[in-house]
Length: 281
Ligand SMILES: C[S@@+](CC[C@H](N)C(=O)[O-])C[C@H]1O[C@@H](n2cnc3c(N)ncnc32)[C@H](O)[C@@H]1O
Image (cartoon, rainbow, N blue to C red; front, side, top):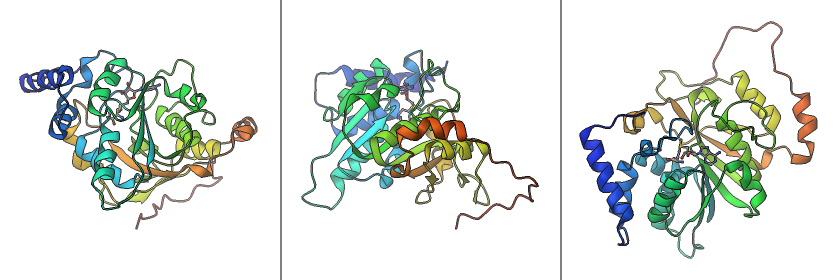
């Protein structure tokens, strides 16, 4: 479990006091909580892959989100939703519809904090594998910083993806709910390497190619955000990540999932040539 420094513990206590206060929180206070409330204060955080997105990264990622109906899957206490809300409220467009944010998170302690920070959002305390059946309607965009890797899913799975990686399950769930999406994934699950490398390149590992074959969803590049810039701002971890975008409308329809899933074969070249990475630009 993450051991907090004295300063982190003090800031966390101040953040927790803001959360339990009766006053309406100012934007500055909301951001203080987002910066300093520690996800490690609930003991399940390593098991659930709970590591909150650095606030500035959430705000930069929001440049990719669009529309007035947005769902945040695995929302934590709402970093990504807040990032988009700031952008939506501050942009120049007039006469836009009110923003409708839906945040789904399974940890009730996080949901309680999230409701204080973003009371105008609809907070659903649930497992994301149940969301597609909730009749929430279709969203303009989905966003997620999901748990990474082989997280225990208690046997649950997304409609199409059959592999072990939670980030791909979450994207596949998002594909049922929204037209497009923006996601934080481990660098090894992205189809490119951009952050923190000297030569950026498209690189599509077998796990990624299987995800595409099973789901019909291709992951794309972002506006050029090098996520290593925020590496020191996570709480207790320094994950190697990329921000990926997706047109989720290309997903394979659910009715043909069974046929597609059994037809999937790893693509293995008979005589692999030398690795020649394609440049991103
Ligand atoms: C990496 S954290 C990110 C939190 C938040 N999205 C952010 O960007 O700060 C992943 C979150 O997913 C939640 N989570 C894990 N498994 C989940 C599931 N099956 N359904 C809903 N939430 C889940 C964890 O509790 C955690 O809050």
